[in-house]
Length: 165
Image 1 (spheres, rainbow, N blue to C red):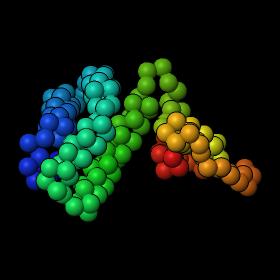
Image 2: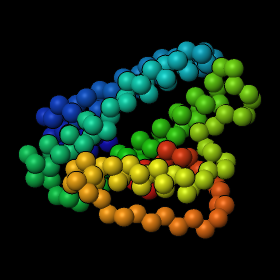
Image 3: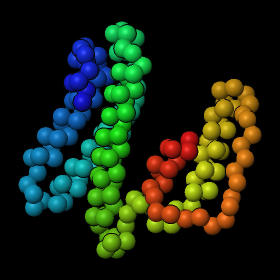
Image 4: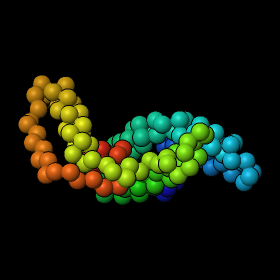
């Protein structure tokens, strides 16, 4: 996907992104199918190593937009595709690590909260947004959260938080 951008290899952050993904693919591909422990350890290592990926994506696309005068549409299309793929990969790898966690109950671990409280997540996101506004602007608009009662649904808390924030 990075390679679909014009002159991507002239931008250090884009080269780092490609290198991280290429290395992750190579490392996972070299593990024998039956070596589950090594696969799990490698996947954990890759997730840690790729933890700052978004910083590279933001800085790389910003630099490319400035230097190559990419349109907002080009940047949006790339970011939509890249981040959608990243979210899918993160969900799958996190779920795999959760269900294969040593010492965990069989079937009891998951990144999906079957009884997620959306009001709690919205309150957390609003609190963080208020702090951020106060930090940057010295004030924050009021945030009213209407709780209509006990609403629960299965979802991944981290991603609902991203949506609400």
